[in-house]
Image (tube, rainbow, N blue to C red):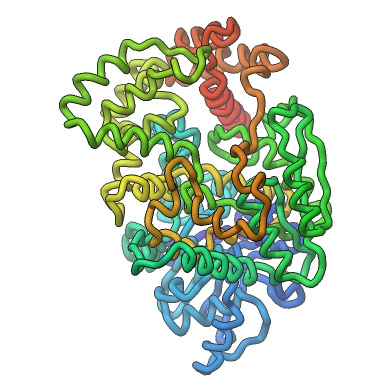
Length: 634
């Protein structure tokens, strides 16, 4: 696991400043504290920070072939590299190391751009082929590893594992993208391929980008997508058996490491399943860790300990103070652009705990998107069942006014909180789902932004992101469609971003078996009823695990990481909220309607409304802006 950076002259062979390249590289020292190096030649510069996990003795980067004309920097792990090495050796390629990095070098020589189809793992990579005067970049299929890039006004192309490495280049324009701001206040993150800066991009998961000197920089090309192609009919029993075998295989290939290895264990279905598979594959006890909360409403450590006892793991639990808000400014430093998932706080803490004992940890991320585990899928399908019984025009006529005029009642029992449901029923599937997952609704964002900023958007709306993915979806099944939307937005933009930054802040490598692309492809081909069966999400997964895990682990209510934002904002963070939302930093941008910000603060403090999620979203945006302004001053 590593951090990579690079500078490439798209117009020729201008010299690369080694000092600048080193500064860019060192911004990511936390991603690879073991080793670091840079390489330059006319027109090309690579930098790499290494966290040594495989072939510690000889896996240094940047790495070149014997002839010295093909080089690579690479972040991630290619788990099938032993098989690829054997295949390449049969083609005549000679290996000097036992690293997966050298496999990538020779895979490019053998198969060119098609080499990415051979790679099974998580990766963000860049290959320089001097003979072809070509720079080739790729990001793994699900977006486990990040890749940022920018084409600067002077024709220099820069890239890095984190946005802070691009910020270290003085040529990067810092103009904020209005569309990214609109997206952020809907989703809570800036979805691919945008970044908060108009002049920088993320390479989307499953895409490559090839640049040739002297030619215009093209658009990235997609090399993989979740197929959602139904398998031939199979019995539930057969599906359960095959799911376990495929899961075991995905776990097994992620157990190779020359450093201590373990797993996160929250006590939920996904992490417990991973630990159960590991225990059956490893000779020694599995190292597991979990965090406990002082507030019992948020604590599920007892379930983690139950699984740990069952599989006799070497388990540690650390209690986290529920009022762990001291990380607020740390998060702004970690994520480089506005990021509003407050579960980043406990995620940071569990990574910090894991790193005390291991360098590599397996996690259960991806199970909810793959196997329809989120409660919102159940709600979305119930709403869609109602939609299917009424013509669109009638729905809008009936539910549109109800949604508009029904009062917002955060304080009331759930049965009386019908406003959101009415609004969703007046829309189509994609619009309804977007409305359901948005942190701030269309109406709220319209009030949040100033008149001038809304004009700058020129009609752009955050729903355009989901509508674009829906238009390219390989499936029209309603459940599969919203799973697909999450795999394109929430999974890479929120979940995987959160885990990557939190883990790499502690030089911890996290591997995600449930996002093995072969497993994802196979699960996508199962009938939707095997994923969401009635009100039971992850149905086939839970059934297949019944002989591995107890019922109260499999079928209890999902908790997840949560923090008590509403209480914080009426208590210890009350003054911070007032200073941030009502202070000069936000007011000076011209983006916001300051009157609406004041209304949010007053109504939340009084208890009339629960604005905790929107306030946190604004708070994190303000923290980003303060950091941005401090950087400009420096």
